[in-house]
Structure formats: C-alpha cells, structure tokens
Image (cartoon, rainbow, N blue to C red; front, side, top):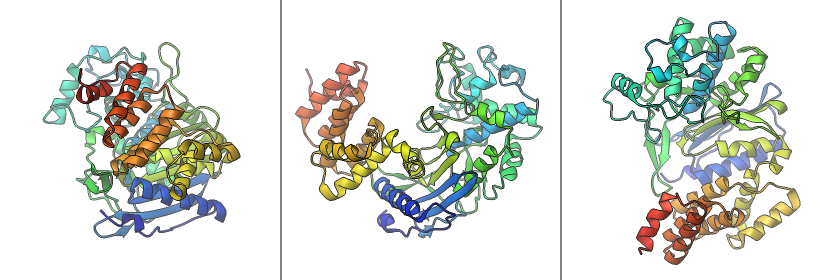
Length: 472
C-alpha cells in the first residue's frame, strides 16, 4: 500500500512534556514509522502518576484512510499476560491462592508430570510444560478443535523438569485462566474486567478478535515479502487462550491502568514489587520473567513491561516513575525497540545505557551523508555525546528492513558494521552473509557463512546455504 508514509500525523492530546521534548519525540516516532512502514500508532507517556504526553499518528484503517484517534484500540497480543499476572496476584492478596502452591491444588485431573508445577512457574514460563500452540503460526498442532488439542498436549512429554530453565509457551496461561475461573467465581475475562478495566477507568478496553465487533478497532497489518506492501492480518485469539493474548486497548487506557497499578488501586505495593521481581531457576540463576511480566533490564534504569505480537508494548521504569506505551497496527513493527529511545527524552542518561538512540542518530545521519564509512560516522556521533554502542539486535533489524525493501547495498553496509562491532557473533556473520548473497556476491557470502560456523558449528542456516553456494 503506497502513500501511508505521507499520512497526516494527528495530534490528539498532550498534557505536557515541554514543547522541545514533545517535538523531538514526534520527530523520532515519525521517523520510525517511515522506516518500519507502520500505518498507525498511539503513544502515551506517564510521568509522576500523570499522562504527560498522549498522541496518535497515522492511519488506523488503510482502505478508507481512517486516522488513529485517542479512541482507537489495538490488539496488545501477549502483553495481555501482564494483566493475567495482576489478576493472579489479586487472588493471592485475597487469600484465595498461594503462588508457591502446585497447580494441581486448584485444578483436578492434570497429567501426573504436570501436577508439581507451581503457579509461579506458570507465570514466569519455567514450567517445562509442552506448548499447546505453534508459536510461529498461533495454531494448535494438528488438532481439529480445542478439545482435541487439549487432549493432545496433555499426552505429550514435558520439555524439562519444572524450574530447570525458561521456555515461553501458551499452555502456562491457558492453565492460569482455568485457575482464575475456579477461584474467582466467574470467568477470568469478567474478573479482569471488573478488577482491572473498570477499576482503572479503562473505558475502551476489552477482549476479542476477528469474530467480535469491537468499536474503534484498528485492523492489524503485516508487511509482505517485499518489505513494503501491507497486507491485512487476521487477529485470531480463541477464548480458551485469552489469558495469554486477546486484549484490545488504547494507549490512554493502558496508561490509566499503569497509573492505577502504581498508585495501589489494583494491588498493594508489596504485590506490585513481587510481580516485577525476576523468577529463579532451580540452579539459582535469574529467569527472564517476573510474574506475568518480562523484566527488560535490572540496572541501571530498571525496566519491566509487556510485549505483544511485535506490534504493541509498554515499559515501566519504576525507579524513575516513568512509563511509555506504544501501540501499533503492524505485526513486526517491534515498538519495544523504540521505547527506550522515547524514554531517553525524559531520562537523558538512558542514551549511555541503551544503544537504540545511537542507531536512530546514525540512521538520521546517513540520510544526508550516505552509507559510506558507517564505522567512522558512528564513532563521530559517539565521541561527542557519550552514547552507548548500538546493539547487535538494533543494527540487525535495521539491516534486514533494508534488505527486505530491496536496498541491498545499504543493507550490506549496515550488516557489515554489525559484524565489525560484534566480530565474534555467529549471527552477525550469518546476517552479513545473507546480505552478500542477496547482492550476488557469492565469494563474500561463503566467507561469512564459514566465519559464522567458526563461532557456532551448529548454525544450520549457514550449513545449508554453504551446501548450495559452495558444494564440496
């Protein structure tokens, strides 16, 4: 779909960040929308318990050029899990549930290997249970219906012993939904609506998917293989899985929820602290998640959040009393990569911690000066501002966007910088090899696929490409 990059960026409200900060944030958001081909986006910034910036950009619906407004709602996908975490903690604070208790205390007739899994291990994805959903497609095995899928998954072996390691899966939250149903005396959807949506004043938030009529819903889109053309994406969140995904909300409503949570209107402060504390594996190492919440970073600038479908995300910085919400209607937009940069406008020290701001500045610079000598351009940028080094993930994502858009030479330049900055990363060399392969430079592709294998002999992608490019 052409022309979305020229859509009007509609301001709906701003309660005050300073004009200079507001303008800088708007410039950044618009730049990211152009680069990532995001049709529509909402942003909310919460500081000191108040919404200090609320703005809508672009188009909610493309065929009729309907702009995003403050009433628009977006699918937040798996960020729904953060709401389920709050619901479970509410039951714990009501004395109806123990987080350390096995799930079998609350649910009957579970397979024997499942019975010792605790509520905490379900919340932080350390249960080891088999996944009822194929993550890449959100489909259930080969089952014809959910009852059959439920029987199938219960017959599967566990992936590992409870607490042994982390592995994200949807079975965990299916079970948590059943637990809430049992203990709340109502379906989990109703319990979360009453205990969170209503309590926080989230007037436009609810559960649903393509089979439901949802007022002001922004349809979801995805990029086609060419990296430019937008296609409609189907939101399909079966009721049985909605404890893990299925909420539709506006950025303003999510901001209201964050304020209510931090002000103690949903949970006692001790419960909030417990939600945001990393879980522990059996060997004592920290797990990536708390109770329904991924822990983004410990220190400095501690952050927790919710991330859903690579299209919606929110981060809370508890020690700085700041929160950022970015919701989009593009699957694959990865707004979580944008949040620290927006936050850095309010917390300048973040620029020295997270390299996303340096990546943004480098992207700005190449628009004027081109892609030659990227390493020197980056060094000059960092020399004056004390900026953190761009992360491998940020540079890789930029390179792949260029590659998908057909800007092969520019992609090779960016992916080459990535390999230069992270010379021992198998993934950096594998990505650079892909760029060279796309550019028709077989010799360099082979060289970097081989380099990738030096750092990770198990890289099957590199092995497969070398069979094609350099058969021996």
